[in-house]
Image (cartoon, rainbow, N blue to C red; front, side, top):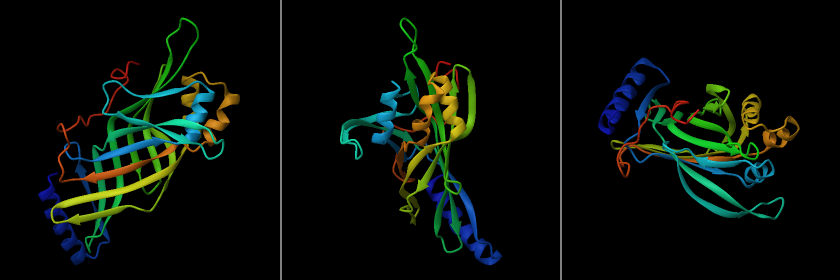
Length: 247
């Protein structure tokens, strides 16, 4: 949906809602071509826990995800400095509720074709064990991030990955023909069953998993600007498959 069509649709919906007495209506934007991004930053605790079980994280080759950088950060509990990675994941779809008064609230968002690879040594002379977390989807009402999880045992599609906290700092506005949104979600905690799928895929002993399940894994900064064009052009908004990721 173009920016002008979005504005016209929003105004028409608002008029219809006011006449019909409805509370709100949903609008979905294809944001593959706009400068809309989610920045995923791991926590110092997550980095420490991954280090204890010899797990590394990287952007998946061929995905939309890119490494922004690694920031030396002091862990508040241990006092140690750890290298915290941040990854950019282009937002490919964003949905909003528009009220009769044109007040806008976020509903959901997607970062399809984004993926992270978790890897762990399998043993001398053996290729690393790998798990892919891909095609991220955020549900603001449920405060859950879903993803496709790929392991050597198979594909687990659109399953709950993290529960998160909405920091309630979202700024969302319709200015002229532009919809803009900024905000953060944080305190990512693994869904228990998904953590076991990942643990199995990386051959992490069950006795070592409780700290991984209890850790706060980081958060995401979201920025949606439906007017600004994405540098370099639109990204691919189709979901990654097991074959794309080498499984």
